[in-house]
Image (cartoon, rainbow, N blue to C red; front, top):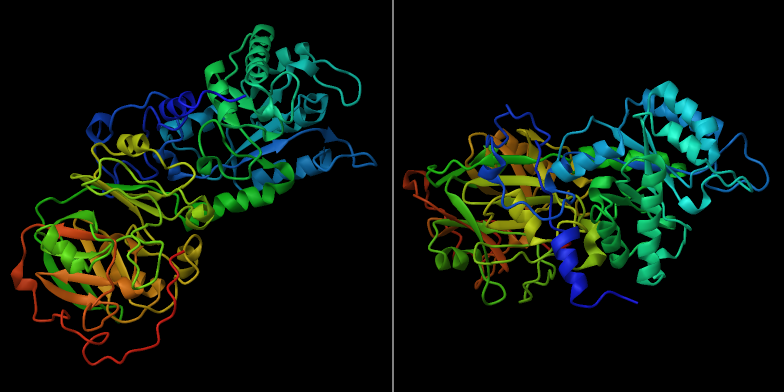
Length: 570
């Protein structure tokens, strides 16, 4: 049995996936000039959503949740694969301390996910399922030695059972809840491992009655839920929300911030704790898990800058105010976008799905919104989500510009974007974060979440912001790797930059002249594209030169054509 067809989407939109209620500080110091200096959420954020959710500001970190079950003295015949010996547990807790990690509580995690509140670097959450007596006898003393917090998820139908593997009694749980380092959560009544497939009344009873039993017996509010065996669906999540839980965890291996929503937060079984830490540490550096946000410099004239930086020839446009646009005919040259918008400059935009040069398919990789669109177009191609997870998201409004890691399973609702940035107008996904805080990111860091061909030599394009808030768009006119491009644009003074579509798509227009191109023939100096960035503002004509590739019939005057590799956007 399922909820009525019209009810499910309504509740999901109004509840589970509508953003966070209160945004916190980003990962940057508020005194750092690279951050937005707005002091009131009303100045930079849109309307508060109805239901708290994993919000964009939480992308300033990656926190793994570890899941334990029964602890045993030693592994013997009949031991289960997910049992943990005292020796293994002790070594794991010692490793957490040795590695400089910080154990935080579920309350800390919830506040972080829903407000963006910063958590310590290398944070981790410890959870235990099924209320085993061994938690109190074996795990709790070790946790107390380290002063680590932990949460136990209790299935109420088995409290105090002594046969088989004993479970903790109500009296033992009452003792534990007196300690501020201990949190108790719900785990249903009967631990149905097929909970999501049960009828709605059964699911509702399992969630509500167990919660009420825990609260009446222990005198605490039960805020968190672990689904038995991770079994949950849309209906289960809605019922959990209705029952009064604030957050629910699964058994999907992913850092908490990369989970689909607050009622489907991932965890790692303890046997994969090394992978859990590796996933978190890799994302923190590779994404990176930071949020850049700053006001535009509104009065900067639009000027053309060309020269060699770090030995790489760059052609760039600085200043003005950008806006993105979609082609009304499928695909067209960047120069046509500039004319249609009555703009003064422009560059090719985000990545598109169909790479064929003669294609008219406008489909984009990642979510997209232009100023002309009233709603966000999410990326619904779930098969490519793993490939584009943690790539940079570009968002701006008339007053602000922001970059942050993109999580496709989660960032798919208009409300989330509207709350993150009040009156946002444009968004799209970049290829990789090239320059951060004025420093070129290494090839290794760039490649963590980028396409496999990210370091291939080709004409590459980028957008970003200068230290004083000017918009910057530019290209490398020689074939270079993304790492070399990053070094060049950092030397040019660009503070933050991301890669945009490159190769044949590369095209920079200034003052009605094509200044750089990635592909040429007698009809199209650059490949027609479905998406472009146009720049409006007052031209500084003193910076222009005579270079114009509008009539070019080769890659550039004086250059020989070379064999083109098939383009790989993912």
